[in-house]
Length: 375
Image (cartoon, rainbow, N blue to C red; front, side, top):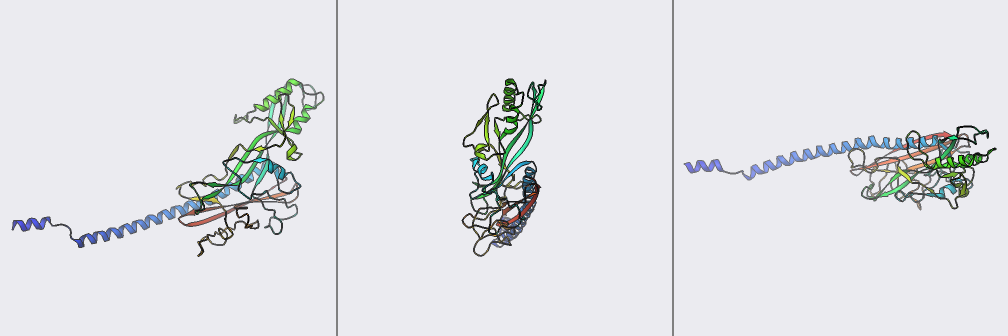
């Protein structure tokens, strides 16, 4: 009797009981996993829908801000200064220019409409931005009137070239298994003094003293922004009224000018105009890119689904203003620049398309702005 009671107290779990437990656990696990997956998808969906308009709007706002502070906007008409200055650019090695990129071509009498037989759309913005003047005090001669004066102050205009362009980024982060993504880069040149202004100053009657000329050249080469105290050394001058090959000079210690033969416009300062494309601001799992399509079929139609042939299409057309060229499928990608109107009443359209890829889903957002100006 004691043996039977001990056996009943010590018997194990039956197979049926184990199967019931496993079944219950499986159901709970599937429900939990589904809820977790739905939560992740919802989180990524919200992140993507918040980020896309932020990235696009920040890009066009930055472009508009630069245009509003611009002295000259270069364009690609063969008879203009644009092609010469464009060919003088030296792009940073870590941010190479996207293949097939082109300057916009000015349409002086047209409207902001898609191209037809003639290409007007570009995807590079090249500008010469006017900076606050360099204030050089403490001169004894050479005031604007040409008369001698004690403690004369000279204000020297300065300029900086800026380029907004596309680059292909390869590496661990890529978009839709293409092996890369496209980013918008804002690059800046060194600072140039106004050649015409300095040259005119050196030829005043009576002329500035050699001491004052040396002082101006020295203070320009060691100039610091008076508010930020950041070095803005200025050792070269630019003549904005002539074409690129003859437009640049080095400033000597005695405020003379040596023509730079075969000038190159280096871009030592460069950074992404759309911070966060390399992984998203929140989860780090989002894949973003400036819109592109490596072939005529990808990323181009009215929905954002994968078709039966495996191609992927989105709701925002890429391109919208340029005509697609199968020999240059990455031009213009999701950055389009149009320039229309005569000098004095010119309008510049800037259009940016940003795309997001998460868990097999692709979405896009188009943002554009029109800037009016005299450039």
